[in-house]
Amino acid sequence: MGKERAFFGQPRGLVGLFFAEAWERFSYYGMRALLLYYMTDRLSDGGLGLRPESAKPLIAVYGSAIYLAAILGGWISDRLLGDRRTTLAGGFLIMCGHICLAVPAGAGALFASMVFIAVGTGLLKPAISSSVGDLYAAGDPRRDSGFSIYYMGISVGAVAAPLVVGTVGQDYDYHAGFGIAAVGMAAGLLVYLRSQRRLNPVSNSPKNPLRLAEVPRSRLVAVVAGIAVLAVLAAVSVSTGILDADGAVNLISVLAIALPVGYFTVMLRSSRTTAAERARVRAYIPMFVAAVAFWCIQEQGATVIAQYAGESTDLDAFGFAIPASWFQSVGSLVLIVLTPLFAMLWLRLDRSPRSPSTAHKFAAGLAIAGLSYLLMVMPAAHPGQTNPLWLAGSLAVVTIGEMCLSPIGLSATTRLAPAAFATQTMGLWLSSNAAGQGIGAQLVKFYDARSAAGYFGALGAGAVVLALLLFALAPLIRKQAARRGTTMDHDQAAVNGAGR
Image 1 (cartoon, rainbow, N blue to C red):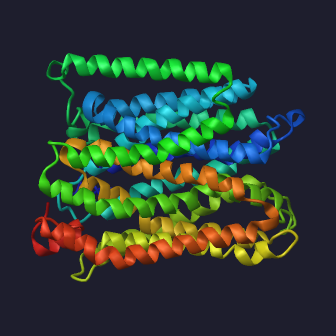
Image 2 (cartoon, helix red, strand yellow):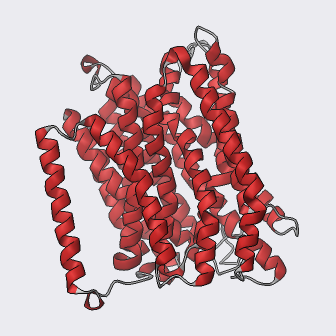
């Protein structure tokens, strides 16, 4: 028992996953902190010279494509490679993407990096998160706490990246900053390789392996033909100019919403999903919708908030020039400070007979995200440069909402996923981010510095209304799951002696 509880009372395997994810997030958030400024800066200063109106939707759908690919990554892990090999393959592709950005080869290198990083992150994220879930037995009360600690690994990398990569990129050279991100991903791969022996052996093999002998040949032919047709259509559309940048943004936005809907349909209709698992999936859907709304606001940190930081914030307010990219570290810093407190809070609350349900936690997170935007209405309504404390405060508030929703969502997904779709459901959870950013790619087109107060007010109020609706539905969500012989919260099940 002493060896098992070596890391904040958690299984030892969490150590390696914590640090591997920290380095992976260092690479991702380092790139993310620079991307808008690199795309919109003048050619003479090393940028690409794009207008913010064009760059923001592209960044949003780029983020959407990254998390959309998580559905495919989850399928590959569940059916073909297993979590460990999928994680390694994804990390390698991410590193290749950052290397592309480190090369001063213009827009071509940028688009190549987008493909590498989107596919690589889609492979890595659901697989490594599923490996965390595999560390815990059914009904283990440490699960939510463990995922909160794992989430702090994300924050450690994310808080350092804008300070290091952002400063080097903005003050010295963009490509040097992207090169540091590539080194960070290489370090993450090394940490993961050294820690594999401490993981649960179940992460080494596909949980629902694909047996080609059992797949009808007609279905294989149809899949291959479909992929070939899509590839030809994409090539023709790009070469003829039919699919331009705006068309790509709209297409990815539609796919980001349509694919999760399709995947929920597949899981609900699958013969491999039991009646009890089907009830859990239905109870999961309202929380998924809340997560989409949350990420729609939170992920605008790389687009609308980054533009507000660069154009509408007094960066010299403290007597020295603050790089605009530094604001990307605020949320991660708050996460590091608050994660131990939230881990203890959830552990204590979830052991209580009157513990808040998962849906209540989601509703609180979404409402707080809405308040973070409502906080920006007052400074944005006044002309002139905003004190940076307003922006930092807004980023801190949305991060508190993230602590109520995101790590709890990871934990709930591993708990509510049908057994045959374990890692794929983790990919589905990550696609909530894709859907949020896909919707955000359309919303950011309406942002204008002259009407920023109205933009922040409308999105903030909408999020609060959705949160109140979810809060009202929370008892019904829990009751639906209970009628099927299970429960929404594993901690409450442990209290009742009926763990899953």
